[in-house]
Length: 152
Image 1 (cartoon, rainbow, N blue to C red):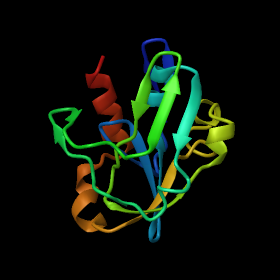
Image 2 (image 1 turned 45 degrees about the vertical axis):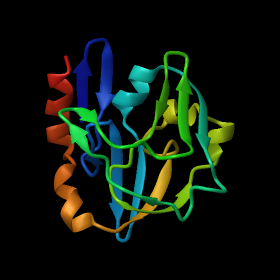
Image 3 (image 1 turned 180 degrees about the horizontal axis):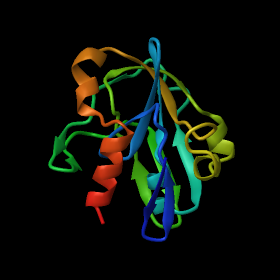
């Protein structure tokens, strides 16, 4: 699905779930792949650095981000930083679970997040531990589209 927001055409994938902090989640059996949405990468501009601590992140237990309104009220994922010309951002976990892997290719080619946010630009995979309780806190693509429109 394409959504026009201002000057940007934002791509939303119908098969994914989305969070208020502009992460997408692809659930495939017992693994959740997580990345930045097309909207997030467009807002950030050209991504120049992605820091994913490959040695410390796998095995880390994460908790689903909590919100106060539309703003996160819990801590971001430690050891993850995304930098662009406009901003330095941190990643919040859309689900609770144990980190399985990180996309270490992004440390060499951070532009993958801009060029292919839903395929080659994924950030981490995790094994969800509370999927039944937490999935209701995520949005499908239609809900996320409405959420994005509310920001304009």
